[in-house]
Length: 295
Image (cartoon, rainbow, N blue to C red; front, top):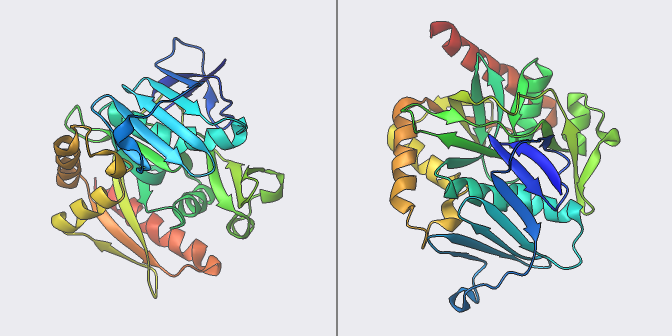
């Protein structure tokens, strides 16, 4: 068994998860390999949700069951830890954190002015690249791909992930990372797990700002109206495929609305050009540093 810590949880795992920080306390979450029997009505569905369990079926991989916010069971015969870990740390962990009552954003984040600044978008939108560009400007990474948010105390608190960013070779080289020395994310994936200066895995931080990533003709930042912002949060939350049958749809919508009420949410448009990465990062830096100086 391996012991890790991430997102404020102690994780005991039969599967190696080398990008997570090592832990030693009693486990909040168990990850194991085993047999998963999906409900008969789940046949033909890639995702199936009940009030207590979430099931994922992945082509050429297997099945994962997430139960009660405390257990992840991986049924994937012949799949090594390197590949299984990607599914555990991605969709399975996102679903588990959702079961624990958190709003889980599909985002990467850095620390600025004592808070977490998150970049939202689907896979391939440049979340990790934006975080990596800000790290090169002197900020610490906070989380990659998943940013869980608690609203239990009336203001949004983000829980830290792990000190690695998944970067494509071209983007990593452009930003000055020693990308060739880093471990590949997967055999057929040109991205690398790049170790960066990261947050303390035991210290949650206020969520200070959110940027929705989109392509555009030139770098620009636009403050979203509340209704637009709510739609974007729903679109870029990890829980969206898991809501049916969970009994948490109303809670999820209420959480998105509450986040809109207490946090500035902006759209960041920029051309997807590597030669403009530094310019875009500096634009974002000016935006949140200016806001921080007025706080």
